[in-house]
Length: 401
Image (cartoon, rainbow, N blue to C red; front, side, top):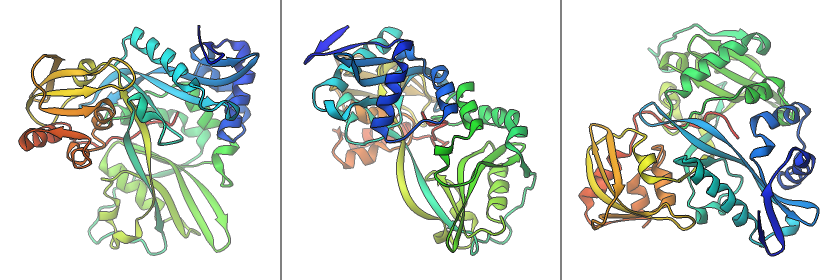
């Protein structure tokens, strides 16, 4: 299909699967569990992969699937979800990743999808392709022995302990309700559910198999890990459709017996620190990006979501990789946008990566401007742009891929 520096990039076939697995295990430093090997071909079909070939050896790989992705305003778009991007350690700096990405993004353009998204293992590689982290979470650690809810905090109840085998339909139903509300939530393929239900050993990192708490409007999947002088509940997935479910589930998590610590992912705006008497106990130990985004079609992407304020401006967008950039007239009224190429003079200048970083509302335009990554001629225009891209519900990745 394409040859660079003696390396050929082509579409993969089913016969390539064992060599692809070997490459991915080498690059990511892990071994797949059998349940993963059974379901990965359904989750990310090998026919959707591109491979880089040196002689008879696969030395590079990327694969994707089309995802139904929620965007601000409880709308959904079809997006390209990219996974398993890797180049063999023996073949660095030969242009292999760029060649793979050129073929991948050409196909996305042909498919007419407005976004490409992925979860990244490293943070310094993808900006040159027009990507930026667009959703982030915090990892928190809570001393359960000292955690108390503020007086007068309601106790909604409704939580039950459950077996994973008996909870599958409930988990699917709650997740689907949740992802329709939350920017960044994706429709979840059955193959991904089956991998979770199989509970691969490498997901556990020395902890137990999954425990389950259910609520009519939520659920928690967590593990227990025992170390010397410490017993921890590690939250693998927390989904609450309503504030009542969120509070009820946290009340039970923080009342588990024989437990010293709860570890969990939390968004910036999660109310948990405000529900307990000592907010310092909700201690952030790590902050990490969960989703990276590239805008493939600026008008299609910007008109697919809703906004928090009126706006009438022209933005200049620079695309360092493909041809998605240009000057765009952006007009927003009552939350609905119109966007088209224009020859009018821009009032805001930014990179395509910045626009991707703003897209789900996970970052603010004023912060990018303070970092000199948005140039604005008029502070009032920047304020209006910043307000418009804010969201009333925090973005959160649905399932890791």
